[in-house]
Length: 138
Image 1 (cartoon, helix red, strand yellow):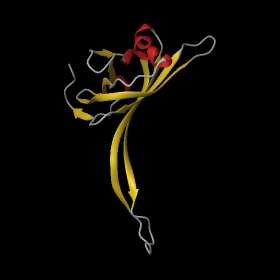
Image 2 (tube, rainbow, N blue to C red):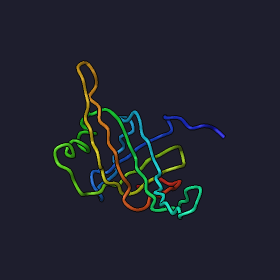
Image 3 (cartoon, rainbow, N blue to C red):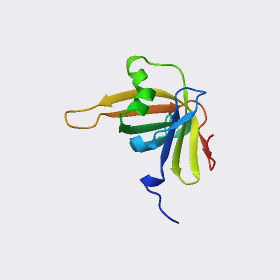
Image 4 (cartoon, rainbow, N blue to C red):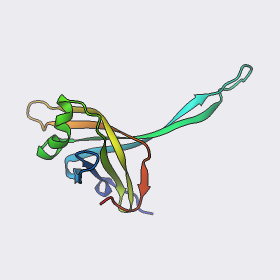
């Protein structure tokens, strides 16, 4: 089995919950998809080791990239005004593996220094289910 590399990855994000997805892969230099499971402690008196049961699960995605007219159009408005509107997103990990769903942007940062590109970072939390599929969204 072949290993995947960064060139296999892709990322698309919509302007809002119903608009078309915009490919921003060429402006991103890092993307992370994270699965989170809350653990609920159920240790009883007299137990010698902690005991847990699974709680709620969820997913987050983080991206970093370069600020330009495309990315600023998506993330720039969130710098000055937070929004409660979710966005559709698609995270491609390789040729036939896509993760998609509705996300809320919880953290957007613009950074830059003299003689360097201005960059951004964004953290998104999936609202409800994260879909794992072999077919891209249309």
